[in-house]
Length: 212
Length: 212
DNA sequence: TAGCGTTCGTGTATGAGTGACACTAACACC
DNA sequence: GGTGTTAGTGTCACTCATACACGAACGCTA
Image (cartoon, rainbow over the protein chains, first blue to last red):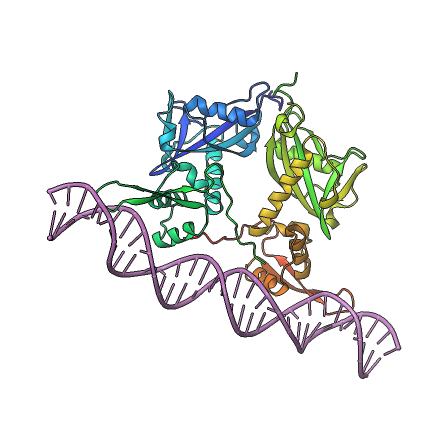
């Protein structure tokens, strides 16, 4: 008989952006989220970070707590609680996944056991929501990026095409972007200007018009 | 030496609206949030509900998970994790608090131990944020209400005065309100029309214009 | 019953922001 | 120098947000 004294665990939904949104799954054959019990004396955030480095080499990613589930909700039959996190990393940072882990496009990930499907859906919803009022999209890009790259991230997450001129106008008037002065040549066409975040180390909340 | 095997607990921030936003604290003298360990085989939501009914008679309130803290973050010295919730109830529903619990205006609540201050602040932030894009404010009102009452709730939570006409226009065009046809006489002045939510049993999310 | 005090309920004009839309600029390559 | 490809730019129409003032409906009282 399982009781709530079971050691709590954390699960991490790690997203990256490779043309489309992808999620990291582990466990070859029986795919699931990176997952593990919290160690003695370990903080929750620290645990999530540890689990992350166990799957990819990089741990310096955006990491945020998502939701806490009990066994009954996840359908695992009443075992201990699971504190879930989601993490975002640019593709060039995550490198090659460890051992038996793999990237799956969100749209064609396999069915996951133990309610992990639900956790992924929850993380995906959060990501879409935060896209609209924070600078979270930049977590998928390197320090310097072009506006076309940024727009591609927005389009991939929101799953809808955006108007180029309106997108640029909105972002440029948000005061979060700074032109670096650098340009990127790529292919035989006009080079793109490079931008960076004014405050690269934080996910800023955009002032959303409080209706009066 | 405490380890993470310590039984998880839940804490609940219960708000009500009595002219101003108030929060329920327990423990006379050494005030803190309603709080307790999760029982064997008990779900997290169920635990939060149980803790709520232990402080007030009513358990049929809006209840939502807030965040999960570890002991180190709360400053309790590394004991088990705390899954926090917040709850909202109209004043006429909560009745007289049990035993040694009391309502405190959010602005003059005492200092709370064990990081409970932080939990209250977190809940308050969430509440303010959700005010803008959900129908959460209605959880503080009875089924039928006047627009003036609703406006008072919005003003109390957002802590800023709202223009009466703009407020009414916005709410009435949101398609969430239905005029009941009833009126309320109160004092020697023109009676107010009564409204109710179109879907009273759910907190609806308002479509927030996704910028394109 | 006429007047007063109080809250309820309503419209408009102005400015800001959003959405739709098409062409020139700059480069690499041939 | 011509071609192919992506980068970068402006305007107009419309919707939405904001600011703002007065008549309506009632209870009370003189």
